[in-house]
Length: 378
View 1 (tube, one colour):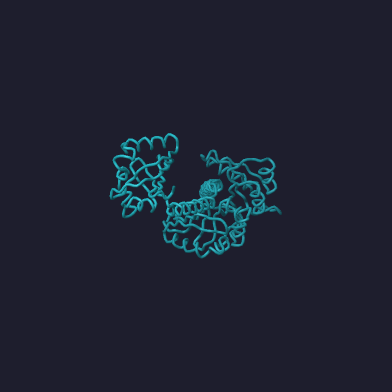
View 2: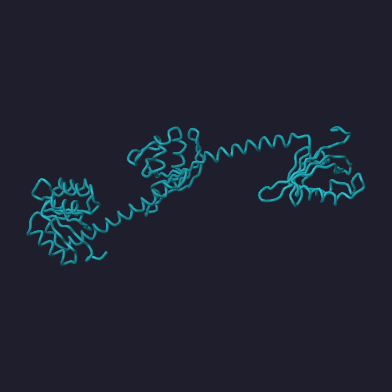
């Protein structure tokens, strides 16, 4: 925005001063309108909805509606930078202006150069505040729309200075003011000391990740150090992602794996799992059935080592084995009688059931082998 595009409303109850200041500011290329009372200023801004980039507000307007009160009423409805003007410099008066959002205090008769500089600084500061507000809104928007995630920022005293909308709902609050500044003890209760340790580590520069159980819910938490322009760590970004369903699914899978592993290893039948390269897994019964020293000994050997050259009917084992595997992949399952041999060459009759499956996008063959030696299963 160029100076010639900047539109200023001057609120000054003395006409001669208003005219002079308008002339001096327009000489600096500003667009200036003036009103002579707080009431007129409210009418101009609120009722007529006129647009201004900055308001120059005389504090002493000679009526009940002084500059400070007028500024408060305007700021309730519009976000406009206000620069106060006064011929008084009493500390009490200056402190009153500091209690509302303003962008400076200029003593009258300081000269047009100082006033011009103050206006430019006020506009620059206002733009910086707007940019920061937009960034905070963007951060809030991202945080609120990140599924199952809650974002907080902790200060060095462990108090909250930022919290996402989803986190507000999580803590039963409807607006930031209800939880702003709340100590992490009030937020995390029995987990306070556990979390505090991670926040302390992060304030010393360590990025941390950990699981947290709160009631019946599980969260993955991540703490990230936040540095200001001086590179000193002043804040901690605390992001929690609810992983309750994932955790429960993992527990179900783990439980299923435990049950499967128990059945797998306790089976009296040999269970062997192969891929295109050979054996990849077996139970204890398998390596014992084939006379191997241990599981590793069995898995290191090729499948063809455990079949004799010929089957009981005199046919060659390899072509028949290939045909059985082919049928298993074609039909999903194949059941047949077979003659195997142990590591030492001793032959024994078995009953084999081949089943096929896909594991990690790879075709897998599972063989369940029942030893029929001595007709003990017949």
